[in-house]
Image (cartoon, rainbow, N blue to C red):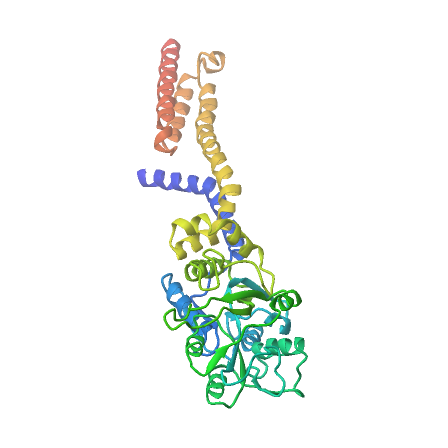
Length: 435
């Protein structure tokens, strides 16, 4: 009997709480369809050749992201244009890119996460060449950068400004370490290179005795013509103060290196990469003031709202105080809280009083049946039939004993039984009067 009563209670609860639970579960399943996917744990970043700053900084990003469980593969590439094509084809997830390279993009489906540092256009020449007329390149052998590279594009723009074409000088499609070797060995007279100051190749070239960096003539005119270029200066003696290298201030033109990714780049990774960029570049450098980078300037592609939000407000509240993956998980399941707030809370707020009413209604119905057997109310009907009504009362009491209610409602059942005893006493008195 006790087991049956327990089963009835369970069935009763399922009857009232079951539909609400099913509705909430279905709401969660629907919300799950709109939940953002988790960020990938493995990424590939396109850099440049292994002697360049891009590859050097790519390794720094790799080490920083590893703290949060992100495996970043640093891929040596042919440079900015190569990175652009790899991004467009989906072969890499994010890449370094020189300012101005975006003009070669074949899609608008890219975003800039921010500029990182000034990346000077270095023009090195052999010291044996008379460079008194610094804007004359006629008759020289000039390393313009690797074919179809961003360096080649920018060096041609500079030559065009000086009015120098391939008919006036020998343009050689060579760049990087190969161009440096050819310049040092006298196979080139001038070489264009676009690298950050900390690039190992640039550090080496600035110390080579038979090669000198060239100050750009009329730099402001270049900067006004190409808005993604900035005029910067390499101070005298900054490379080696004791040896006075360089021996003069060197005026340079500099686009800004930037991080570029597909427009569907995961928002959580945006925060992670910009945060890493702040750690790497926020302290400043030879050309950059502390706090100047990363920044939303000198960009080839528009940043999205998540990027702008980070630069305006910093990392999200969750990201400030929680580990990356925990913060990401909570951020992803926020949409799952909608069913909880919109459906679950009011539904389960309504269920308890409805459940209480339903349980009590069973007892109230019993009182209506008991009222029919009360001699004080129905004396004329009961008179002469007291034994019949006592028999009906016994049957009624047996039915009441089978009512199963939760523990919190037992008091009402006990009160009902007390009232049954009171009615029985009255019926016995009526029965005695009949005898």
